[in-house]
Image (cartoon, rainbow, N blue to C red; front, side, top):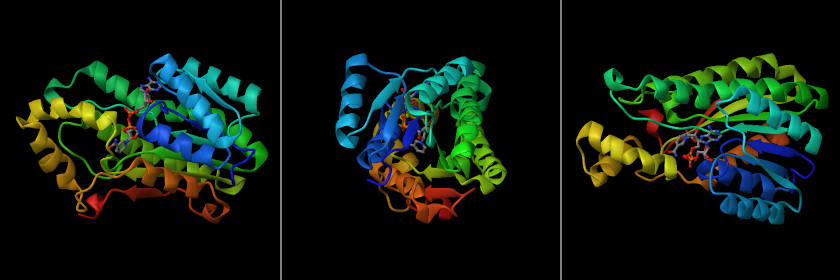
Amino acid sequence: MFLKGKTALVTGSTSGIGLGLAKAFAAEGAQVIINGFGEADAIEKERQALEELSGAKAIYDSADLTKAEAIADMFLRAEADFGGVDILVNNAGTQFVSPIEDFPPEKWDLILSLNLTSAFHTIRHAVPTMRKKGWGRIIGTASAHSLVASPFKSAYVAAKHGLAGLTKTVALEVADAGITVNCISPGYVWTPLVENQIPDTMKARGMTREQVIDDVLLASQPTKEFVTVEQVAALATFLCRDEAANITGANLSVDGGWTAH
Ligand code: NAD
């Protein structure tokens, strides 16, 4: 349990990849702060399960990450309850699929705000405590779409490329402070985010559900397999080890060969 005594904040961790990351950190003994939306009873069950896994405290913070004040409050609470955040994962994200000429401006604003601007806010709140401790790990769940584009995902691709750029910039700024900053770029992982975009992709491309899965999603991944949440979580956990202290400013692909094309 090499993360005993450390506190990990994973944004958007009531579901999908974020929940998998929270479980992986808890399994290594970390105190975990989970965040995101969902049904109160289900979230409370997950919180309790995390405490059982880690033998340490786990808390849930309902901050809406599109609101800068809510992010500031979440960090005040982390400071009060745990003395700050040692491991920050900017994972919350959403998707919307539409041709550019019909792309609703409010969806553009939401995706940029949640998938990119929230990471600016969390990082600026997290860095001062990490600097004081001389140790920190900042990880972004980016995407293969931080490296390459797909049609109809203008806001998502722009935000993820932005997150990759933010990662590199902050890595340089904190490189001498014991803090590493990286992003992990998964290909398609089977989570609600992927499942929910299937109907819109069917509409945008005039395809059946099976065609979207085989000819759009898995067409990009030479392995022809969805990436698993556990595979992403294993890499994130490795990045927290001392052996990973010189991995910084990197954009690490877990995409079944997608971006090797
Ligand atoms: P998901 O939909 O299962 O989880 C998204 C999480 O974000 C949920 O916990 C949700 O409650 C939370 N969230 C949504 N809006 C929020 C808000 N305003 N404030 C706080 N939390 C909010 O999605 P996922 O597939 O697990 O995606 C997680 C991250 O991984 C995203 O950034 C996504 O872009 C990225 N990603 C996913 C895939 C994939 O194939 N699933 C691939 C590459 C990258």
